[in-house]
Structures are given as C-alpha cells and as structure tokens.
Image (cartoon, rainbow, N blue to C red; front, side, top):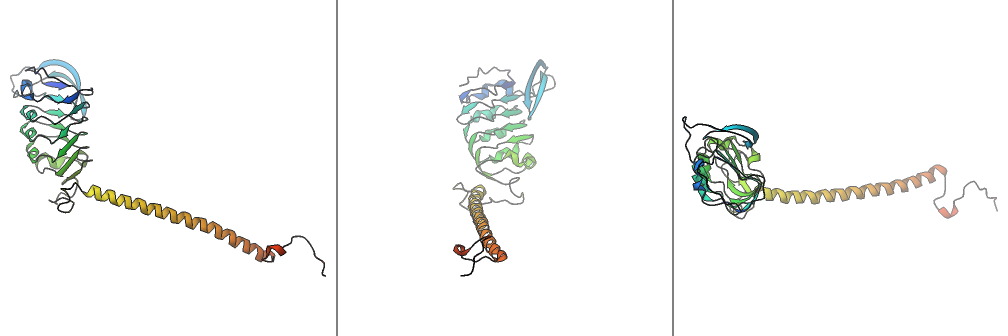
Length: 262
C-alpha cells in the first residue's frame, strides 16, 4: 500500500516498476504541485533524471511547472481509480498501466485540460470510455488496450487520430477506428451488446467451426491417402499377375519350376 505525504511542490511522481499494492490514495487533490498554472515567471529547477514521456525515454535536465508527470505503472494496484484524480488540473502525463485496477474510468479525468498522455492499458477496467474524454484536445497518447471495456469509442478531437492498438483486446468496444468510421452503431445486434456478446465472440464461434472443419478435412485427407496406398498395392498385385501371366489363385502359382504333363 502507498501513502502519499502530499508535498505541495511535487511535480513529478514516478513509482513505476515496483510491487506496490492496494488502492491508489483518494485525496489526490492535496498534490498541489499538479495544480499550478504555468507562467513565464516561474523559475526552472535544475535536476537530472530519466523518465518515459509519450512512450519515449527522455533525460530531463530541469523541471518547469509544465513538467507534471504521475506514473504508477507496472505495480499491483487494485480497486478503482479515485475520482479525485481529476483535481490534478495541470497534469500532463498520467500512466497507470500494468496494474490490476478495476471499475470504471472516472469521467473527472476529462477536467484535466492539459493532459497529453493517458495510459490505462493492461488493467481490469470495465464499463465505457467516458464520452467526456472527447474534450481532451491536447491528448497525444491514449491507450486503454487489454482491459474489459465495452461500448462506443468517443468521437471528435484527438480520438480520430488514435490507432486500433489503443483499443485492442477489450470486451466489446466499437466505433472508429475499430470498425468503419462512417458507422454509428455497434457491430452486433440490438440487445447483444448488453449481454456482452460482440463480433469477437462471433469470430470465436466461427473459429471453433473452422477448427472442426479443419479436423474433418484432415481426417478425410488421411482416409483418402490411406485408401490410395491400399488401392495402389492391390492394382500393383493385379498388374504383376497380368504381366507375368500368373494365375490369380496363389495356391497354383509356381516360379521357375517345370511340371511334366501327367
């Protein structure tokens, strides 16, 4: 379990790749360093550290008010993402991937207008992607893959720029870019989405059918092949008798022996 001390000037919190467990602390609004508005008269703090920014490892030599990073990725955090995370109004990079977080994504994340990276991949999140996320006009990196999400993908602003990898391996997400962007309906029959059935399930059923057909085809091929070998031996035996002029009755066959007439 993690207990934050809530320092008022903290701007970069990187606890990634540890073994922290339990829930994420709920009183995140106390992290005052993530709520400072950027201005030209804020002096830079000289530091030197490496951190992953927008999926690229970068070496920072100083920190400005704009360098606000919250990274708890690759741990064992469980429970829901606290709604108070939306109070970090100046946050730019949020990475909670590779945990065991559950429940729905808080719509309060849409209040962080400065957010440029939101990575929630590889968790156990359920429900829909909040439509309010379409307000995040500065979002450059978005990843909710490998969860249990279902429902329509938000449209507008930055969501039209994300690839299918941002949404892959979920329960039943639909919409652009997973299916044609000119379609405004789920790729399954009405009522089917509520029961958790989707194209993925249909495709799974078809894959089982294909597997059975493949086994049947394999069996038929082996049967035909075996029958062909047996037929070849039978025909070969008959051909040998025909060429050598041998009788068909094996009990009367003789080789290299002359019988005197009686």
